[in-house]
Amino acid sequence: MLLMKVTKEWKNLLPWKRANDSVQRQHEILHLKQRLETYDIQFPNLAYRPSDVETQTLMEISKTVAQNNELLNQLSSEKELAVEQSLAHRVGTTLQILQEHLTFIVTMAHIFSGPYPCLRAYISHTI
Figure 1 (cartoon, one colour):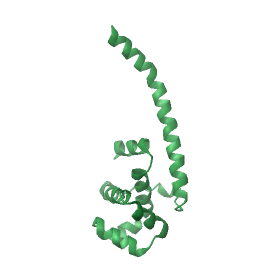
Figure 2: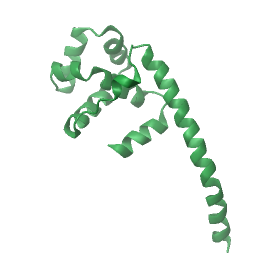
Figure 3: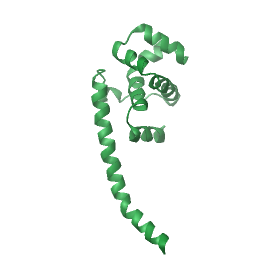
Figure 4: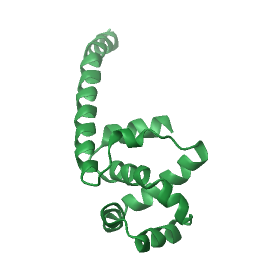
């Protein structure tokens, strides 16, 4: 009997949780949008989706960048070739891949390193 009551109460809270998650996700998206604007990255520029193989490689690169804030800031703000070459060597990829997908890498690195738990959860479920 108690289990049925708890289950019923939990089901009543579920719509509230979904609404709360939706609001949190909206706040995270707005915050990320503002953060990316400082790097001249607009959401419409992120519409391109790499192939599955490229996505896995780019996600690993993004995680590496996310773990090093100094590298992330240099790569996204200065866009120096030397930094890109250093990163390419560090993550074992070509400079061409890095340059072609720079906005994707910078965006994902910010999601991995920033205050975006809902976006990280969404990404982990879609990839």
